[in-house]
Image 1 (cartoon, chains in turn cyan, green):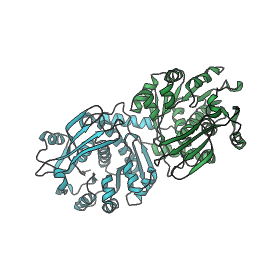
Image 2 (cartoon, chains in turn blue, purple):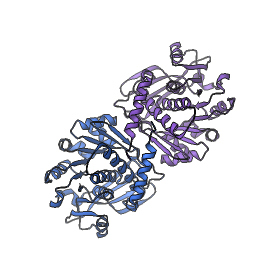
Image 3 (cartoon, rainbow over the protein chains, first blue to last red):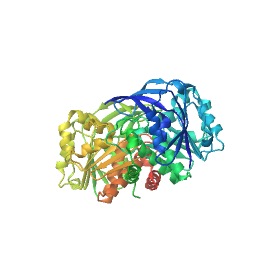
Image 4 (cartoon, each protein chain N blue to C red):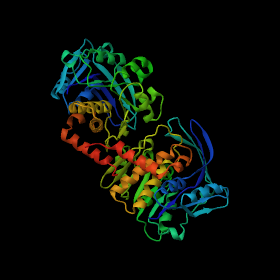
Length: 302
Length: 302
């Protein structure tokens, strides 16, 4: 089924303890779409500046990603620069230049307004909510991401959005900040009380915890021998999760578990090189092989 | 089969963000034994001072724990005092009084020298190794714990011990310190290269990673809504793991997985109250119920 993502398209500069790389293709919608594209066709709604390299656009088009909702605005593309700590899990944002992304109001192309699956990547909550109102009909499944900035500065808008989505995806520190609860299970249940049926708490190198009204599911990160650059891991996790669900067409509890496990696997590829390099090198067969490994390495014989 | 643990028996003072408690029964051998006792009879080799309350001794005896190797030395019992950070995962050691534990040389009682399963809890590596040489025959399975102090100050002795055990149990920061590898899978494999067939890396609230020559196994911590005091969680994890294995009699890959899952479950009870209070309140049926929950919450339908 059709999948739509709204989020950032950007140019990143990433510094790890080992290396510094500039002019990297990035942005939440890009990582999401490249991950989702392993499972289904995905439409990006976003904005780029006049400086956006044409090879990046071509790369996305070659992955069967629909760019009809990617508008070009006068000015420069969104730029983000970050530096990872030695643990490769924590990072400092060194610089953010919103550029054309600062004045962006998402406009969903007519053909995408009937999308069955919708992911609202991390932008201003009111803008996320605005996308939902543009849809011709309620999608089968709507998930949203958020960040500490909106939790602290736009809580009412965020609460309104959260009450209107099927799933909230956020990381562990955001879940704690949003709910005031330290234990993630309790934080997850506090999010459910705000409306969604599902909350997916991303724990970085420790995987993810899914809390639903019926139960909980814990999936580890696929363990790697070496992490090069975790930028985009969370967005590709979400992309593979949503892409798998859209390919299934229905969000059953078992499909959700498989989807999140695929999210974990695809995110692991993202971490193995800068930008989208390792993610895009992975074949579907390699992804499926890691999925089977994850099934095996988590199996508790009862 | 018979299980022997060598480690500390102590009196703790624990401060959490919510509460401060004094004169608590603690020590690695005590947490280990109380956890293991759900599965098998366990013998403690350790030392207490003349001030050790008789009710603590009675409590352990009532749990079917053999105290024939618990010697009483002139002086005071080992004392530890710690304070937990708001995240309940990090803690500062406020005070350590070794007392009789400082001059302790473990002496394994004659009847325990044929123990089939041996756990060398965290003491000086040379002392751990000395216990192994006291055994009348090589136990079927020997596991050891360690800590940053010995990794930094007694590395040669630790390496010698590690090359002589079947399994090393240590936490994530210790695994990184010991091997110089940040990624835990790589750290685990670096430990395997030192000799053991199995390494169990404890990740606190994130569970544990088991690395063997044949593969890997990831088990989450059993998620709790509220953590009161995580002191002893690692030792009760090890106790339940070894207790389950001793009850099985053989360390097959599937038994090891079940054992570590029981370790995770029993450690979760430990975290729900101060000292051994919640651990000792748990019934075997409650432990088995959480084990089944853990099986279910980690299941990836393939």
